[in-house]
Structure formats: structure tokens, C-alpha cells
Image (cartoon, rainbow, N blue to C red):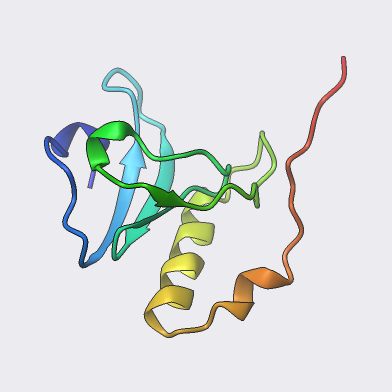
Length: 99
């Protein structure tokens, strides 16, 4: 589902795979929601219009990485199959680039 399609808070039950994409671009950033919990591989919070308070703050993906889709699918799998340990061994990639 694309961000511009969501016009009201999401249901607290269910799984969603959401593409955050500005209307004028062909690329975007994948995020996911499972039973009222938001996941962004960059560790960002959800857009306010989702009506979601719980989210991960850990950055799993590097700033210039393009693996957000696979991370979202893995996160949804871990939630749907009660496998929280999948992400516990992953490192925080909250990197700072110095110029």
C-alpha cells in the first residue's frame, strides 16, 4: 500500500507493507506494520496519520542502503511466526558519515 492511499489511522489488527514515496518520484522506502507496531529499517517513527505509537528505534539499514523491503518482510515474518530472536543478533547500523 502506498502512503498517499492511507487517509485514516490503521487498524490495530493486521499486517501492512507500506511504501513511503513522494507522489512525484518512482522510488520510495518500504516500512511495515503488524498489530499496531511500526517497523522502519532506518529506525524512524511512523507518520502521525497512522495513529501508531509503538515502533522500533534501532537502525538496521545503513543510510544509503537499499534493503528496506527485505528487512520489512523479515520483520513481518518474525512477528507473524513469533520469532523475535531473528532481529536480536543484528547490529545497530546507526552510522554517522563525517565529511
